[in-house]
Length: 346
Image (cartoon, rainbow, N blue to C red; front, side, top):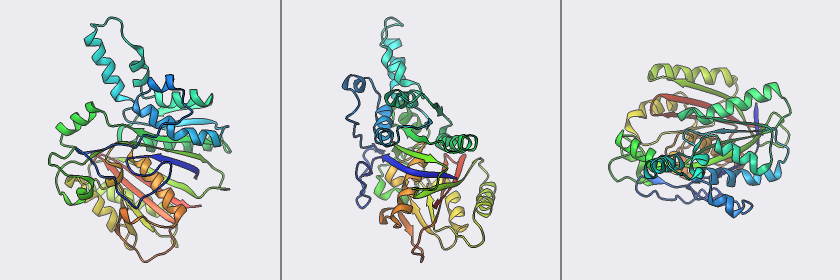
């Protein structure tokens, strides 16, 4: 098991430095921008050279690294890294005709710049890796943490999922129909019944190890699947539940990645039918849709398990139970990449 000892999330909502999930921040122009609160410990000269994705990641990880100074590694999942800086660098190549280019945008544009900057600022010389797997980037980071702890029991790792809204990606996804064409904000996201969603961004960072002492929750199981076959996904979900929940345990909350895109509603309805009696919550009207939004979902599930209360902002369906012990996350990215994550109260 992957025990979560501490977590921080910077998102479009009021999740950092204090958490307030009673008020919904509205989207603008199909976008939910993360509320960037810069870590004051970052030197200003270095800060100026950082892209937004790197600023988000180092700001979220800073307080964790202060508290846990002897981490054995940093594991990051990101689909695009600093894509905005990458586009700036490519534009410079054209603008200056491959002449004298500013290296900053290039250095900050690579996906592994995020994990590298976290390691550099914290002087952490341990395991440092970035997973770039589109809609399953964060899930692969979690899987890596599971594997590292199998090989190195007792070690502690920082695991994070991070992506930013870049103009380039937003425009491509808008043209491909993954962003809604009509004006819809996050308040009415699930009522729209049209193609596409709203764009989001954010970072969630976790301190994990295999020591139960002091942990409030744990990632008990994880499964990933590539498929467009609804029956295959449904059977995989049911098998996931049967393998990881004993007969006397039930799902108390299904945290659904439903994103307002009518093309993928059937997947979420099948998952809801597979957990009768469970409360159902949705989160992408809080975070927006982005490839590593499952990191926000894991942070939210950890928060619910700690508080033992489901915020009304996310509730789609209540259940009769009072104690929340098992939360299952299901999301898919563009109907192809699916993930199931089981979190339990430790």
